[in-house]
Length: 347
Image 1 (tube, one colour):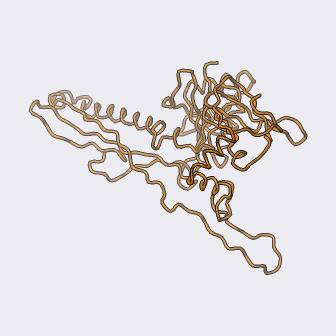
Image 2: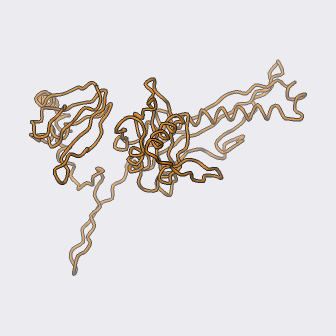
Image 3: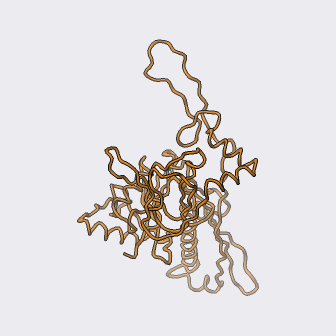
């Protein structure tokens, strides 16, 4: 046990590596798991800043790991030596000048259930003064084809067209990889920290996927996982005697969980320790979900957001075509994207 309920709060703890459970008292005195913390998570920050004297929960190690701790005395000494940090902590404790909801946004005051003609509350709707701007990323290559091939080997199949098709497929594969893994706009790196959860025991169990769906509880559209992670989930279902039904998607029967399609995506990485991630998201602009971005109407457009531009013929009679694909992705609201991390697939 790392922290015991009722003991004095002695500092902030950062979990550098490993997995722990936050355990507290249930409604009837039984023990309940309040949350699962893993690599990069922390606890004790609110207690130290707000001056809480005793832990109101316990922290129990699930695996071996590495912890970094900052004592209350050292924290107060650092704050005392920095005017900027002291002001930042003060604003955090006060919570701002306007009433806020649990997401840190300005609360919209509404009167309901009143009788007569009381004075109605005024309100302020929070919005981004300087919202994030997304620049379209680009994947490009130059396709080179000898004119002899274009002249003599275009029947029964157009060789230039077929080489162009394979080139476009390679660009689309790179685009898919970027949409998942890009540091700027990739899904794995743009999920809100509050939307990231960890498996309770390691492998992806039905309970874990239920927890994941709860992060995007408003009309989840799709689950994405590496094929090996899907196989690991299937093993967990088999061990419990569960057989998830299939759903029809674009004329194909695909596996699902709770009616949400579970689609394979081999662009989701697998670490050397045989761990991966599972993504759930709500899609579409009308649903305030995850949307793909591309530009249409570009010069020499071959497909939406993709252009094929003839670059000329060199002195060796080689034709050159510049093939470019423009793309990006945006998460319109934080609860449109959730990630189940540290999914163990080696069990």
